[in-house]
Image (cartoon, rainbow, N blue to C red; front, side, top):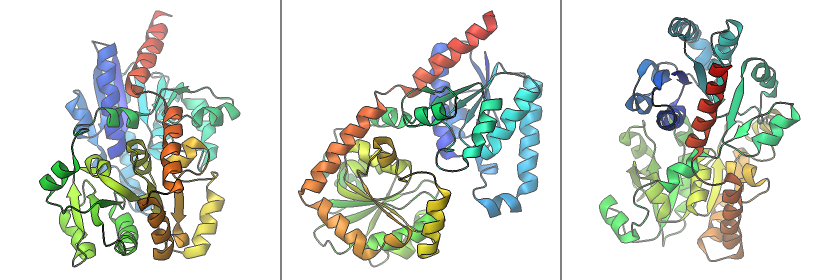
Length: 380
């Protein structure tokens, strides 16, 4: 069968590539054409457009590049029309992908499936109308999305979370602390890991406060997980003279050897929890208390970290916007560095959360359901 996939950013490229690999296991005749990245390209098929040429994040960048956004949408629609796939599979990236879903359904080109739901449970809940009209099946990677969609009378399939797969298959799981610090040219003190985000703006906002907060703990060394796509020299302005190290391409290994971590909200909080490292979730935004109040009114959720959202209770402390201060962060970090009831409760909470996520094999489960569904359609 012919599969047309659309992923508009690095995380989508990662998850779509894993799905493509699984689809090849289920369908030996699978042929791929896609908007995506290098990881998808490595699985085979034709790359129509790289996500680097279409990843405009935020209102202002989209407006400034609106002509390019429209051109990419036209390119995608025309390419799908000419190629005539058996299915279009969308991966997150809702601003772009829901427009493609509408086009494909209106022109009755193929079924439209969605792998990794847009976060409409957090904001832009109105997008459920488009999903109901234009998306034939949704394959979810977060268990709390099932009751959310049920509330809107829309059935989805929870297939597990691919982060569980990535961590269960990661290399160096038996690496010792001594091996890691020697290879990474680090000291012998226990480590506090700093995960300050993947984008330059995030790092600028978060890393200075993280460093100042964690520097109070002299018996520990601070190690930053360098973000892919960010130049090593960029970090120099923050770590110069601070005795802070940066490692690239070793985030999982770094976390595995860390006593505790300061982590910006996002998938990194889930990764940190699944590895079992106590953490403080930190996120700085300009605007202080006013921004925080607006933030709370826009979002329709109690928490922002995936750990707390999946558990449906507070497992990790979230220090957001004006609450993310040096004083608050040091207080929370001090509790987690010592063998305290809070530290033990957090680790116990991680296990509860992991049970809700379930076993590995999310891409394979999704691939099986996709091929099974398409086979039924072809026979009918």
